[in-house]
Length: 93
Image (cartoon, rainbow, N blue to C red; front, side):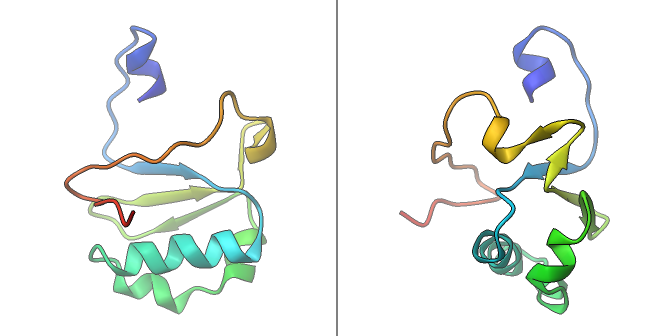
């Protein structure tokens, strides 16, 4: 998405999520995935997610959960987090 917003099309078939490296947040992401057809995400523990820079869950589409994206950690990202909605991931607000 970031590439497209900057005028460079880089279409992939996966979903990339950069998360803050906390157990609470890792659990929240796994729980959210479980509500949108990735029930097997519950087989992962937050500690397993936090132990690696990227964890791939599923395959159609694959969801890549990043704790680090290259040299960028969640705390060093640009901007501040904001809620968003999509048909695939409805807002829970």
